[in-house]
Length: 221
Image 1 (cartoon, rainbow, N blue to C red):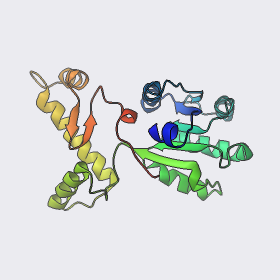
Image 2 (cartoon, rainbow, N blue to C red; image 1 turned 90 degrees about the vertical axis):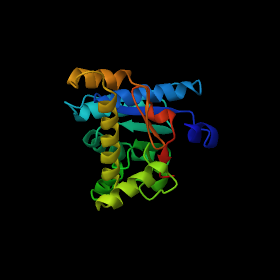
Image 3 (cartoon, rainbow, N blue to C red; image 1 turned 180 degrees about the horizontal axis):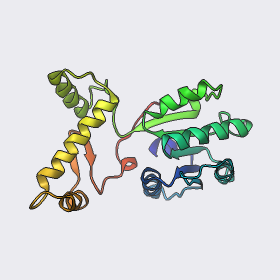
Image 4 (cartoon, rainbow, N blue to C red; image 1 turned 180 degrees about the vertical axis):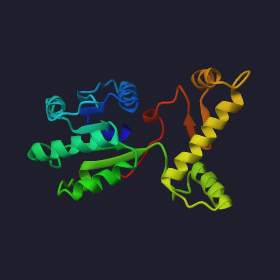
């Protein structure tokens, strides 16, 4: 948010999201982030992932573009985001070309853009930003990456973003198990998950009170 508001002087922020947990929670987090700047989401487009028809993409796109956004945060699953980008680039090329920045949370979406290129749907580099609360695995300035690298070297694993997420997930679940009260059960696990204080894994904070967009974000800028 600092990048857009303080450096780029951008205030027209919109969102494309679906009905997945990722989409709904990301919208809530984006709202929380914007409150720090006394701002709100200017326009939004929503897709029901169980029925992603052409009409629904058309309606979502029109709703988003109704307020002439400068940035669109894309918070939907891989398939829905792929279809949205394909639709908006095919049908609204003159509207969006180099005028709107698309932001994706997760480096995996880079592969999606590469797939779109194979269908001759090409975005300029200045139209796309990929962000994550995880640093790239070659960022040895991060304590998390240094710990993950030591773990991988010890066990003969190659460094990868998938491996990093597996490492963090394992550490997170282990911490929940260690802090669960009484006999370990599904209910105890969930109670601990939602009531425990935030968990710090190296320099990465996780937990029920943790909002990704309020913490340090690594981007492809």
